[in-house]
Length: 432
Length: 154
Image (cartoon, rainbow over the protein chains, first blue to last red):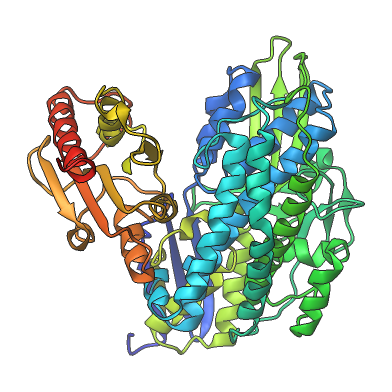
């Protein structure tokens, strides 16, 4: 720290990340003069890759945008293309897509809670270090994650870049025996999920409550995954087709990733936003437990994101049990699709939040142009806003190391894809 | 269980290719699936722990980067695996981390070996480099011999 009132720290490259990120903060006379979260975003290239491709290729291509949430990209794309073709895949596909998504939320949320977020709050450098002292907790997390991967593999053929989904449905239907085998595991896992919520509730969390807008899908009769309207904490309720009228992407000079603002302001997407806006659709057994544990939603404390993920894990296991128990082998795993020229929109809830797709397709079924707005880019402006508020709450006079730890914890609440490793963040703080 | 770990990128798929050779070996096909499983996985991350959990003995095959000449064959025991660099991993969780975590949790099989093939850092391409062919053949022979010693000592 310099002896004068100016302080500048820069860390240009984040280590061991998917993509690259950096954080630069300039503090003048005890005030944050600038704060820039720089993320380099792969999906921009994917939008160009997709141009000229046949609609049958799209799902396999977009699955490779992310190794942890390929299902989300496939689901948003499938819905957008089917909307363009006015194709309805029917109730069996609808239910199986929901099961598919349960798998992805389970493996993503469990990985994040146990290996990315929890070590921060328990004083460990990594999930492996934490495992030496909390072996049963980690084993429980691995069981949940493995079941999530198994659900994705059941419908997708494999858990890494699944290949089983197609426009219209799935290339093959799971066998009854495979479904029964997974159903048999759900009862024990439901006990694990309840125990996980209790364990998360036992962790002392900071409180950085402050006002912010949050956005999620909302469905009239279920906790949202693949379908719904876009709703906000400010009372907005709109069709996914109208996303562009309210949400604007823009380039910022310090990042190759686009920022997205809602009527000019930052907003939150992700598990906390979903729980806040859809609490009434959660099963009673979950809301009863939430109240017993002393939590109240909606919450504006971003540190409640871990509990929101634990809630969604419990929900997904209940939902998966239901879908597996009622499984019927179908006559067709996918409906025939006839391409037609037009524009289609798809908006589903990736583990990290709203994932919006727009496809313009020609009469031959080729993509003319594609737009993909991922949750991580939507949260960027909100992360910067949160960091600014939270650092003031924390105290700017802290050492650089303490500021680094604070910033990492805040950013991990959002579970961005860039925080997949333990020490993802290179921080620069400029003090003047 | 013999698991070929890798990814589609260039020589990082060498583990998969060794498995394919072993799957075509006539002698090995005589073992029942309950006795011998030859399988491969794509960047399994922590799932590797689960994949290994049902077996008493696991041989892993993967590309490694130690600085030795490309094509060099290595054999590592569990204790040495943590020090190896694996070229590609899923979101920072690779074979070394999975094995370390498995060891901490007591979930590793009693017999665990890693057969490594030295590669150069993979480029964004799908084809194997020509020098890998000899290594694949040699490694498949070594692993076949090791399997037979383990499963049929007579």
